[in-house]
Structures are given as structure tokens and as C-alpha cells.
Length: 147
Image (cartoon, rainbow, N blue to C red; front, side, top):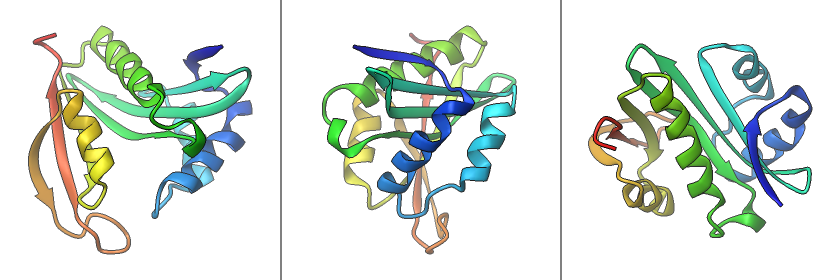
């Protein structure tokens, strides 16, 4: 059974394992601990029978939200888990009064770009040398007021 809930300390090892499997420039485990304890951060996990199979993290500032990271374990991808996490975090952000959501995605991450476009995100601009390895990011945004 699939369940999405707020992340807890016990989830961090599995979340970090997914992070390492998902990104060329992963966040540190230390940073995930900070996210977990910051009241301005929404940190959700998706569980399949107690196993963490995905997560979504976003920050909330005034009326603007920022999706920091969203990832699904490779063996659970293309099954709607990412879409479920994204919908849930956007719903919670809207309840918190967020009207605009932004995120960055590596310009080479075609599946990520298509995923966010499919969910109504629009390209805003290219950010040169955004990632540690010097690769560029695309900044996307979505207006939640029209939903």
C-alpha cells in the first residue's frame, strides 16, 4: 500500500539512498537533517509497505514556494509515485498560502523537464553553471492561484 506522509528522522537513511541513486550532484545527508528540522520546509516521503520509495522537499517563503528536491527510487519510477508526491506537496503549499512555485532542473535531465512540463510548470530562464559540475539548470515556475 502506498502512503505519503511527513518525513521523520527514521526515514533519512532510505531518503539519502534514493538521493544518491537519483542525482549526479546529491545533497549531503547533513542537509537532509537540516530540512527535517526546519519549520519552513515541507518534507514528504512516499512509502510502499514501510519502505521509503520517494520523497519531496520544498521551502515556503511568504507567497513563494521552492521545490528543493523530488526523487523516486529507480525501481519504482514511471508508476505515478513522482506525480503523487508532486500533487501532494503542491496541495500542501497552496494550503499554506503559496501562490508561485519555482524549481530548478538540470538542462540535460530530459525526463525531469518533461515531468514538470506535464504538471503545468513553465520555463522561466536558464541558469548558467548552477550545479557543482558546471552544468546549467532550467528554472521553471507554476502559478497555484489558477488551480
